[in-house]
Length: 324
Image 1 (cartoon, rainbow, N blue to C red):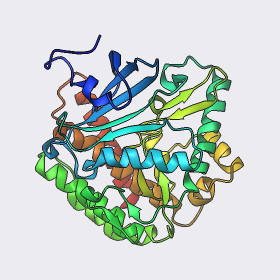
Image 2 (cartoon, rainbow, N blue to C red):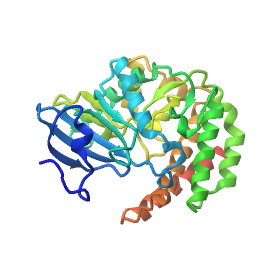
Image 3 (cartoon, one colour):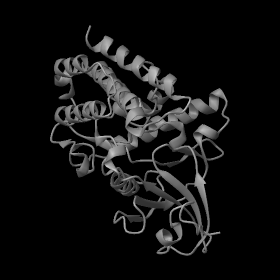
Image 4 (cartoon, rainbow, N blue to C red):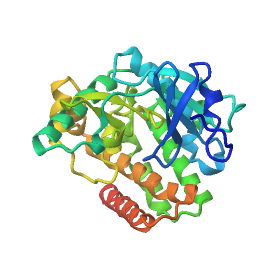
C-alpha cells in the first residue's frame, strides 16, 4: 500500500506519479547515506527511489551536489553502453520532499555481496570487474575532480583537483573535531603533488565499486552497477581504492588481469614511475574520508570504534610509505 503516514515514509506516491501510480514501497537497507526504496508501479514496473540529504551540516564538502553527480554519471555511462540502471526521473527542487531525488529502473540480478560464490566464481567476477573498469576509464570527461559544481573541486589539472579534494576533507575534519595528523598529510601532499601531474587526461572513476554496488546474474556476469554518486573525474588508479576501501597495498591479480585483457591501463599505471606513490596518496585520501565521515554523520553504533581504528591505521600506514 502507498505510505500515508508522513512520519513513516516520504511521500513516495507524489514523487513517482509522473511514472505511474504507486502500488507498493519497500525500504532497502545496506546504505548509510541516502534513504532508498523499491517501488512497484501500477504498470508492474519496479523502480528504485533514492533520497539524498541536502543539509550540508551532515555532508562532507565533496558530497555537495552528490545526487546530481549520480544522475549525470548514470546518463554518461549509459551513453557508452555500460550496465547501469535507466535514469527515469530526478527532482532537485525539494518541493515535494526535503531531499534530492533520483529514480532509476530496478537492476536485475543480485548484489555480489549477497552471492555465495566459490573461489573460481569469485575470481571470474573480479576479472569481470577489471574489464568493466577498463570500459569506464575510456570515457573522458571535460575536467578533473568531483563533477558537481557545488563541491567546488574541479580543475584543469589532476594535481590541482586532488589537492582541493584533500584540502576539503581536512576542512571537514577540522569542522567535525576529527583528530588527524594534518601536518604530515600536508607534508605528503607537498612532496608528492608532482607525481599527480603524470595524469594528463581525466577518466570516469566510479570510486565505490565494492561488491554491494555490483549486481550479478546466475552465471556470475555483472548485470548492473549502482551508486555512482561518489564518481570522480580523474586517475583510474583511484578505482582500485574504492573497490577495496579497507585494504592497504594488496591489489587483486584477477582484477588486474581482467583489466589488462580488456585494454585497461591499471597495471601499466601501477608500474609507472609515479604509480605506487599515486596509489598511496589515494589510499591516504580515502582513509581520511573513512575517519572523518564518522564525526560528520554522528555515527555511534557498535562498529564505530573498530572502524575508526582501522581508518587511522590506514592513514598511518599511508603516511609511513609517503614520508619515508
